[in-house]
Amino acid sequence: MRIDDYVAELDRALAGPHGAKRDLVVEARDSLTDTADALEAEGLERAEAERVAVAEFGEVAEIAPGYQSELTAVAGRRLGTLLFISVPITTLMWSMMWRVYPGDADAWRHAPAWFPVVSRLLDILQLCVGLYGGLALFALSRGARWIHRPRLVTRSLGLLVWIMLPVTGALSLALTLGATGGSHLDALPSLLANMVTSTFWGLQIYGATRCLRVSRSRLARR
Image (cartoon, rainbow, N blue to C red; front, top):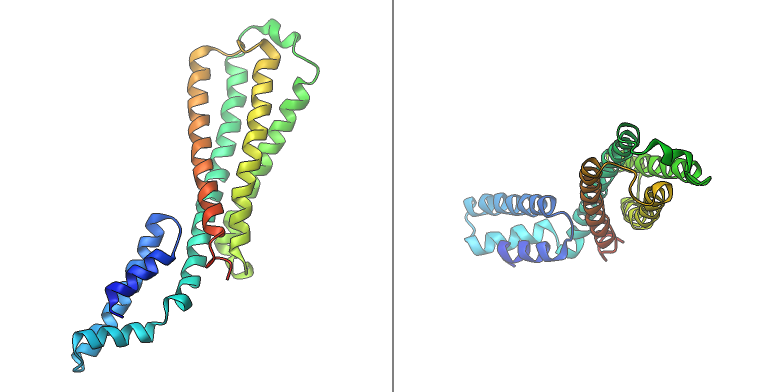
């Protein structure tokens, strides 16, 4: 097998973040090319040098699982970083919104009895999600030496997002509508805050979907 064919097969076998995947494939190509160049300098024909280099490098079925494990960890680290940063920002932003733009003060006096309980529950859930993102980030980076199956950590992040986003979304909607019938916050600040929140949620869903996809890969399970 020639280098181009081998690299193409390796690229098809892997799944993960585009940039990280490209870097791994390029690294493999460079290593194969260097080996082939050295063999050619020793007198082998180019085609034969490439075939020997590929044979020495190893079959795709043998090499790909290690590469896939790294890609799975990369996907998890990216989502963990996003959760660790975006969830506290979102929580702080909305906390400031309720304080700086409280709207009609009379609405607070007529808020349902469950309002503070749900508000506290939402804060706790968001705090837990952000903390888990930070723990997962640590486990997939500095703690990687103790984590033998990064696939499970990455997969748990994806599942966490898909479970918690509907829950936090429903609780947020209940707080917004329950206190004032939906007219509590000033329109423009509320619109901007919702745009930021929606952007973060969109990125989290994208990252979670990718984590579930790469952790479900046949190679990642090896």
